[in-house]
Image (cartoon, rainbow, N blue to C red; front, top):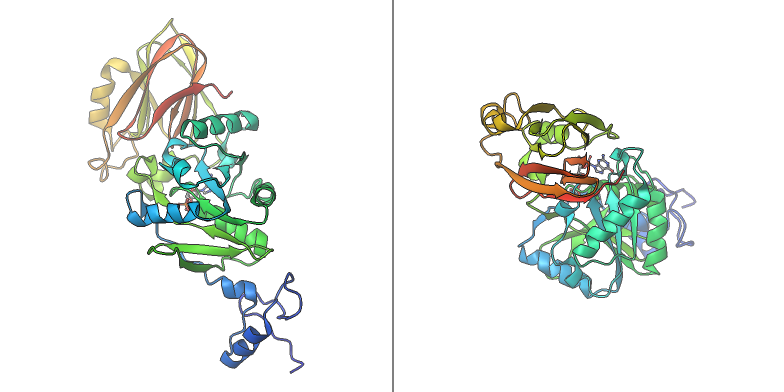
Length: 370
Ligand code: GDP
């Protein structure tokens, strides 16, 4: 008695009077805590140590139950996508499941976007992509979970749109959802990686509940495995060679018709036809090996060199790596040929080009962003 009791979670002085302030613990919990020799403040009591929650596959019944259970709530949905892999970030059927709940769309990995790129353009494009998938977000935010860029702003927007309701954070794996959740936990609670896990009702799936100031929850849901991601075909170091790590420095290539660029062994770009030498700009991981060759030799060159000269994939992994599949486009206006998960190539008007990616990984055309 008279002695200061500290929370063993966050070290805050435990107090029983101000619910909004640090270290608040209900009287009864404090008594129990002292008896057990383990006093947590209410916030930390709710936040057990952070456990990675296991991802689920799209066909998992529990995943459908999870989405249905979210549609039964009155909440804000925060939908996290990777700006470099928007198609691979899509959750099929999401629009049917969220019901009338508003969706705040969050494009992550802003830190690697080249400086010249206008954020408003990226936002518009993201919104269009979402609309095409039947999703009508109330707003679009761009952030970097890794560098904390604009995470503050995102939290303000969440506060604005949730209107006193719970928040559900959804996303497929590899988009940076865990990184974002950790960043939110640090910023909103000041407690490092302390989190409560619980179950979604009627499923075997875990959830992480982060208490918000008004007693509502920010709920992290399991990541969903979207098999059509470049990330699923590469491991560890190889994945890092392909995924943009730092701000992208564009690379200019002057190509003649019937020339090919290889991006390691994971992707390929052909300038099939057009009027002579033209300029192409590559936006991809700065350390990704790019090799120029003749189109007529390209198929053989790939077969002979994938896993050795053209890497990643490594020699060991090349047999499990899906074959590259070509997608042909006639370009009528300056466009970006996007290889999802890798980056894009800005292509001038009036040419015919092909983008190649592992089977299942999307290759698409959009109006040039720069
Ligand atoms: P989750 O599967 O969605 O939970 O994704 P993770 O949080 O595990 O992140 C997947 C990968 O993306 C990791 O290698 C992260 O370091 C990386 N990552 C996450 N957020 C960012 C970001 O804002 N910028 C960059 N460049 N990488 C990020």
